[in-house]
Image 1: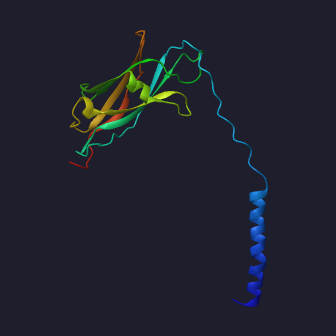
Image 2 (image 1 turned 180 degrees about the horizontal axis):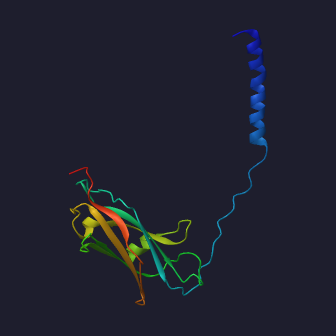
Image 3 (image 1 turned 90 degrees about the horizontal axis):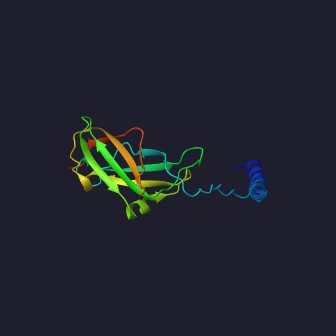
Length: 177
């Protein structure tokens, strides 16, 4: 390194540090806005159920067959009554059918299991459940697309089914057992 390069480097280093200091000391960012909350009016009743599932279940027991998938559910009151999802007391019934419309698995969640499933993501109140085929049937199913449906049944008997099935891939995973 020659003397000229050394002098240029010695002059540039303080300028770079000064530039960095100006950026960090130049002012604070504006305060973060708090999320807007929309109070839920009392007495709302669900009218629509939205169901989303992981399309590829995992093989939780390592036997080579998909068996566990996560579902998210959002209940909505009529749009003219409330703009975001709601929580509502009731039972969730899930049915997984195969390509020949045969029932492969059924789950019913109520009480404490529903309470534990409550979540509040940015989209609004909802529910997350982990459905394990081995809990209610055998996971040894031929590879196929399964149709998952859900119905919410309120404590007053009102029921709200999902409008259409959610498709999940079930059967052999190609790994394990």
